[in-house]
Length: 116
Image 1 (tube, rainbow, N blue to C red):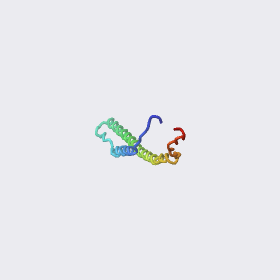
Image 2 (tube, rainbow, N blue to C red):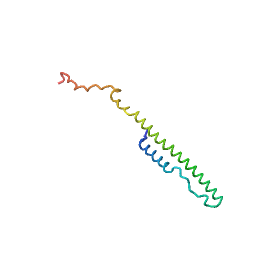
Image 3 (tube, rainbow, N blue to C red):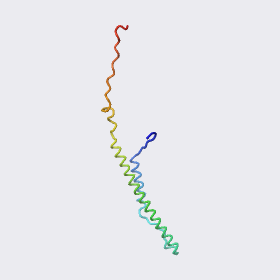
Image 4 (tube, one colour):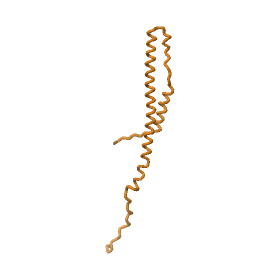
């Protein structure tokens, strides 16, 4: 790829995975405390219950998405580490076995006789 490069730090990916997982863990299974029964009006009670249900579903979907993201970040970090391990040492032998050994430099050229 001309003109660009990507620098990935697997430790940063692992760190992001821990942060995302921590967000999910810190919210857990908390329920929205609306207190719909306290309103005394059936329509308001039904609307509050619907809102609570929809909010719970949305939180569940976000939690699932964040769980998947945390696992994927960790998986990608391991994939980068594995690729680095496979590539480690790949270029170390290029200067020795693949190239011919240069011959030593010749000494000074002999001076032709009779040219003085």
